[in-house]
Image (cartoon, rainbow, N blue to C red):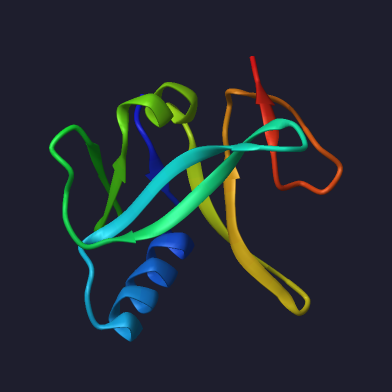
Length: 108
């Protein structure tokens, strides 16, 4: 299936990379979280790691390590603006539940 970004998210990613002045895309991953088990990581990618899975969507490259890919396969990254709040939102079909704060999740 892979990983994708919405057109709006791709536009924001390109803007952020341009403002930063360097980068070849975004690195997506997971870490362990105290609430529900796993939390999302988004970082700028300045180079591709040899074991990364690489995806391109709307002109943006995404890099995911093999361990995280298992849990992120099929995910779409969106950019949401709600009032004064704005940020990236993971639409992950592998999530089975999330904590109340929305920062971490369980997988099926």
